[in-house]
Image (tube, rainbow over all chains, first blue to last red; front, side, top):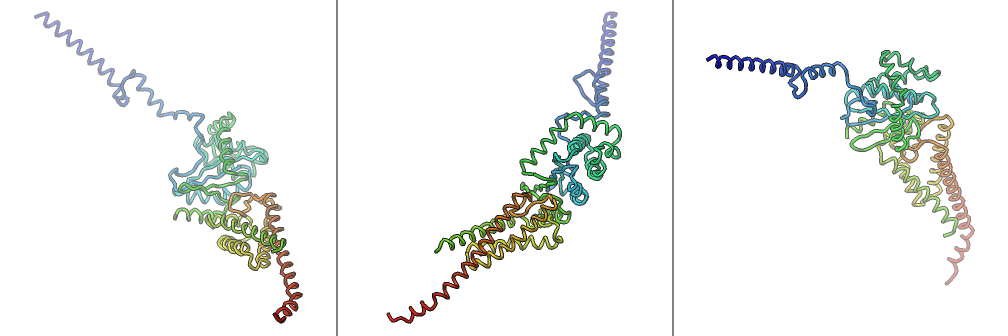
Length: 237
Length: 160
């Protein structure tokens, strides 16, 4: 009888220990989202950390220098030099209204391609900064600022001064580091190579893609009204 | 057929082929793209650029066919010369102003450069040569016809 009682107590103790062990083991897993297979303490902390901080973008990921939806029926590529006055005029007079009326409405996917000309002292550095900003998801603002403040920074090369009004100090620091690291140069070279393969010999140069067909537009500043006519013609095809 | 006549007909046909090719390169794309090229010269208002972009390729096509056929060569060559002279003047003006634009001569994608200017000048030279040659040939034929008229009249009146 005493043996039976002792055995029962040992079984109860064992069951209690097992229950505790199961509770300690499974509980945190359930709290962490039902993940299993690794130590609960570590697993429960990892996702919390990941959710507060974005994973770093790999260095070979191309910076995002495009605006609009990738599924837009028309793609417009603009080979441009940030220090070229005609590129500035194209941006302000043609591309700004295009962004408002065609890019933001999902009709056109606008891609910026860097084509810095050797005759312009600061255009490659400007391109590096724009690419770096594209890596941080701040391309649109930096792109606009580089064109609209072109006359001030092309005098002394103070590009960062021009960008300080659209980027936070932390963003500007990161953009500066990325631009100076040399990691943006392959992306600029890639755009240059693409332009050369399409016989681009001056800036700005635009290419429209629609239904698998590539249309080179006349080099130079194309007015918004003529570009609009052409895009509307393509959209009605 | 004399050598000078063969040269004239060959020159006219070459000019005609050039105009036909120019028309083809413009008609195979949207006229709006050609209007953009015209507009980049900054000489005409937009409505005029659009009108010219519609009309000019068809005019070039007709002129090319007329030059190829050789009918009324002196007049068609004179029209071609006038057209090429206008093109050349406009291109020189834009080049001297430093406009970084496309020529728009044979479709799109060709920058205005010394090469395109030299080509247009050569075409203008050929066209002027054909025009002058065709007028001289006509005058020579008229003089010959006038000089040989009594003889032919005599031949007609001679008994067999």
